[in-house]
Length: 105
Image (cartoon, rainbow, N blue to C red):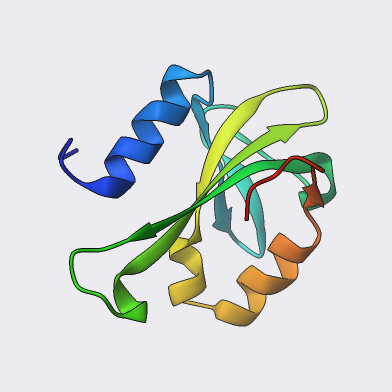
C-alpha cells in the first residue's frame, strides 16, 4: 500500500486505532474475511465516515472509508468500492447499517 495515498493514510490511521478487520460486500451481504463469516448489516454500527478526494478533482476519484463496529465490538473498515459495481445494492445494504450519533459524514 502506498503510504502517500490518501486512502491508505486514512486506513492506516483507523488500523492504528484498532479497526483491524475488513468488511466487504459479497454475495448480496456483508462479509468479514478475518472472521470467515457474513455479518448482517443490522449488526454493524457506523462510527466514522471519511471522504477522500483523489489526485484528480472529479467524482470518479473520490471515495469513502467507513469505520464500523459489530454488535460484539469487533472493529473494522469498509470502503465504498463496491458501490462502483452495484450502487443500488450498496445503498440498500449500507442503509441497513446503524448510524452512531457521533459518526462523521
